[in-house]
Length: 303
Image (cartoon, rainbow, N blue to C red; front, side, top):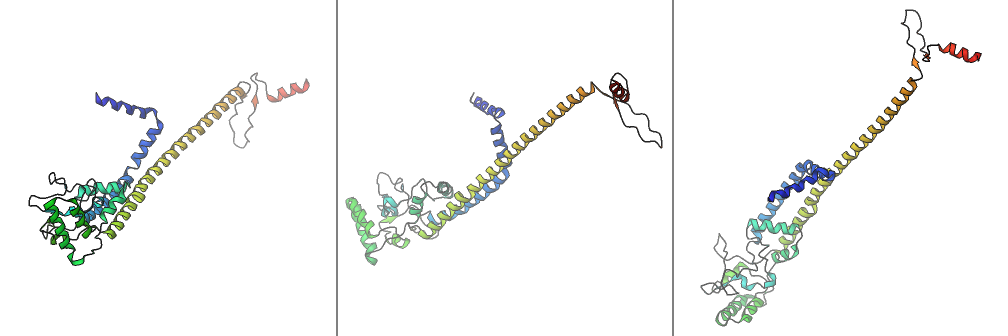
């Protein structure tokens, strides 16, 4: 019974405007397919770039796989590298670049301009100034050890203030005694950096948004509008031809009636066959009584 809802498509039989719209979509299918292929290629290239640059960023649900501990403590007592990133700088797990499929979904969100600036900000995360220089890593390790011993969250904030922003791969691996990671570099086996790239993010996301939203999607709309305008012009021309034909038929009908009325009073006199050397006689109309026009005119003069 659910297929009875398809009866709603019967409205196309009565709605000429909907029929024109469907014909427009059908005619523009080729051009729209070409633009769609170009758009898919753009998404794929940008997705590969984003996975390569941003697959190691920390997500806002990074501690969901580590049990009840909100700071991702592993069974060996070490904490995840994302514990050093403030919550406000984490990338949303619904809009990440952990794999190509998720990257394509995130790029579609950017294409629609849905909160894309926050995604770009999370991908632009960079390391802050290191006030303590060479001792920063050692001081952060001591704070993290105190947190492991006491559970005081203030030690976490202290470690974050010592290593503000994000941390490079060198800093994270220097904290290997207390810091670990769920995703390691497949080549080196070490924990990757949790930093983004501001220059690449600004250029990549801005160019992608302009190319996908402001150019390609508007080109699709332009193709559809052009085909719709052509369809409307064809309908107007067809109606104009119908009106012209109607006027011609009306004139033809009026002319036929006039000739019929004129034929009731006059008949055409048949011409005699032509003989060589003689000029053809001019046709003359005679009344139905059979008398010649000259005699009729004479009789009128005598009267």
